[in-house]
Length: 129
Image (cartoon, rainbow, N blue to C red; front, top):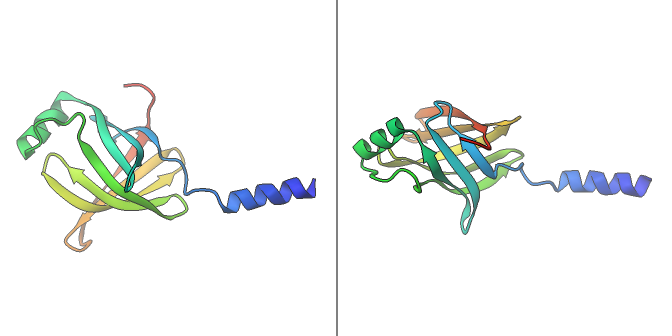
């Protein structure tokens, strides 16, 4: 029994920073992003978007929103936290970003101007559109 308990404790200490792989819907419910493994870390691709999001992206210079990689190079930096880059299709800009798993939600924060200007969204897991 003690050996099993020690094994469970050792595995808990070696656990990854949480599982954020899967489908997430943004807080405005206008896009679903699938997060999965990519060669340089985790990345996220838009798999569904509302007409308003597609129009905003097109106005910003991204003619095809669905299929666009909007998160890339995300690597774990803490228990439940990752850093990488996020692409804003409606502004045609890439920002440094941090994501943090908080319960069943993903806090997504992108910053520019050396971290002086930041915006944050809270995404939720989804299994359907």
